Image (tube, rainbow, N blue to C red):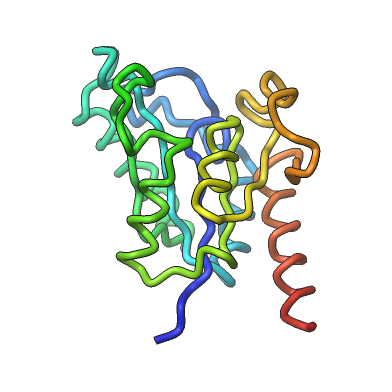
Length: 184
């Protein structure tokens, strides 16, 4: 059976505004370009969301609240014809030393097993260095965006990592990159 390429997306600061720990789905604000970007990407890739939600282990949010926000996000995307195959959420803080918090590639590897993914032809998009290094650790092509915390942490990213203004610019880069290499 042929393997599928995928795009892994960070949640806060990449496809929605990072306003801190979101407890209420009504506080969720999509970046205006997110819908167009994801619609474009899903024509070529399976889409997944991987999000660190340390507010749970810090006692700021609950797992139920995170799940409600994630479910609402999925409903909003589905209403626009966008299919997210799975959403993976790490509830731990850095000090917990868990295996699932980005930059650990745990959820990428889990998705690869569950959905028969071709990681070498896959991408990850995020606004934190941990997103970039999660991709590198999994053998996935990282793309760093300047939305959310992107500008703040840009100095922590090596020069060879592709940097884009936002998720739409990243999607345009990914699709043109894919098309270029399919012609070779």
